[in-house]
Length: 345
Length: 271
Image (cartoon, rainbow over all chains, first blue to last red; front, side, top):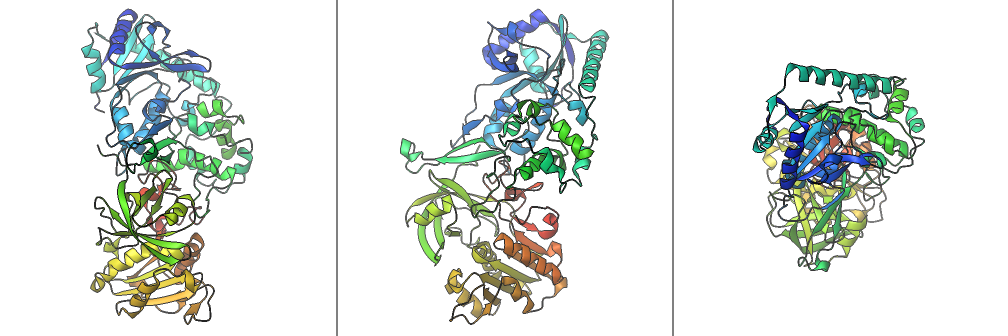
């Protein structure tokens, strides 16, 4: 993504007009109040006022838009969906996207399905303003406001919205809509800075009881054979909610079905992929029966090593963003912050 | 953009019974697939599933790809029921094969067990195409019993090949067996190699890979000169689906052939 600079302010009425135009050309997804917190929903001109700005990350991770729960991967030529705009993405999800990009766009061959969606999805992020009790990005050295990886980023300042351009796509989007743009003034930037700092303080308050070293990779270095793994995983029921809801977990299962029986082709290779999880007992098992991670605590350990050691070694990025979704989703009430604290203690 | 998950149709041209539970399938893909020895392919049984196999034929033979398959799981069981003329899917090749360029001019020691001979056969045939480029080629092979030995007729040719030294053993001999009896590592005591100028290539069941590697280390082979074909459940082949994770590596993309020094500190390599 080409970096484009520029911070503008737009008044809220003009912004809504802008979104009205966008929703005619794109599928516009944004968060709104739902049963589980803010949840992504599709928006059109009629319900734009229900969009929630700021707040915390939505219940669904961003990956849902780029890498659906299940999709067919057998067409000859992957077709692009209608272009989308996802609004209200938080810094934690943008960070997770860097892992997904490394996996699906990197390596010897890019994944054409992910790539199509990625290229046809515009990201309008915004600053986190109300972190949840499970949020802990600051404990991992991250900030609750986006600094890169977005096309546009919003900071709501009362009656005005500060729009930061993060890419050429973002800049073009702003320019193609005929709304008045004003370069941000000193007072806007100062207010944005103040608000951002206040959110960082909130996060510090939320996490004041959790203490583990910032460098979790170093923390794990000599913990592989620790007897603690059995203890920290003892409440795990193996439901895989943590990996499903994780914004950076990318593992999947390829399933073959019989296209020929549906008259699709004489032989027909019909393949579907569905999210999979390293927490399932059979995930790493080979046909002859060997299974490197047959025990629950081995699978639990693998999840943490993947996030805090393997991905950092491969991509120089943690695969945990501190979004806290796994804490919220856990049936066994396992809090990854407590796990790291116990391991570090 | 080409869809990397979509297999090419391949006709089963011939089926060779190797042992009671191992068959070699000769496949004729609709489009040529060129691979390097040690790379693997994914074979689809339509509607059933897909599994990874390293071809047992040499890369120079592109129009007929051979895969030697033991009947152990869902996909291999269905493959074993298939007949000549039926269609399977094939996609690949994937991963990194045997680094031949690091072996030229050296003594090459091949250590195989059971159906693990399949990728080693491809490798060996590649070496035997250009025997002058290697100082010496030694093949050590172990099977459970004489009837479990794969490539029986080809072994006869290999034993007569002056470019190759062959040692074989079986865990349990029968009354006709004149060669060694015992686990495959005992073969390594039968000859000397120039440790300063040799490589070892190992493939077989996990337990054999483990003790084979330990024995090589004990004999003074250096970890960086020992190459292992790792068996994990490679699925997408592209380093994306996560199934074949081995520590920080994905076997499909970073392997399947690793030098031992790359992976020796990963706790779960032999599991």
